[in-house]
Amino acid sequence: VDTLQGMLDAARCCAAQDPPPGPRLCVVTNSGGPGILVADAASNAGFDVAEASEGLRGRLARALPSTAATANPIDMLASATTERYREVVGEVVASGEYDAIVVVYTEIEVADLDELGAAVAAATADARCAVLAVVIGSADAPAGLGDGERRIPVYRTPAAAVAALAAARERRELLARETGALVEPAGADVAACRAVIAEQGGDGWLGAGRRR
Image (cartoon, rainbow, N blue to C red; front, side):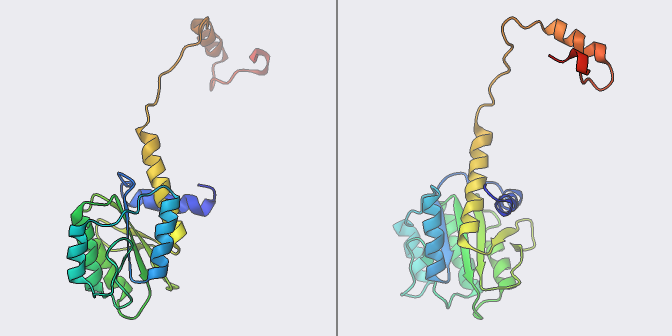
């Protein structure tokens, strides 16, 4: 991360859940523009914003209006209710096709934010993928959605959410790397070094006359 805010955003993502196990990312939104912004930012960050399978698209089509988009981003349209969020996000989770889901909510009076948060949290309670939310247009959006064991971190912009998710993914990759092994330099007199340190006593810092 490059900024203090970016570090805090990434920390909230990592503290709330495990990082995404892979690069496949799905966007579920009630507004096309912000959904595309998330998809573009995710692609630029190295995520795979792949289209949903025909099977998943068929199940989504049965739950959505005919004019909704079911590929990815999944645009449920501005008429999306809390129950529609629950059903669609639940279908995406159950499909197992994605490693991360970004749920976008542009504030419209059709859905109550608190109820929507509880619905999305319930739909993702057993999810093995990472889940983040972007809330647009709400001056008092909470830091997280849901109040159970799984609390979904909320971000104010698509870019912030994707950056936090990318940082979490990078952390996972770093932790998975081999840590290597300690190397003892050739010709080092370890016993003599320990003797010098032991002579100092106290906290182990060398006095000015013994530093080299």
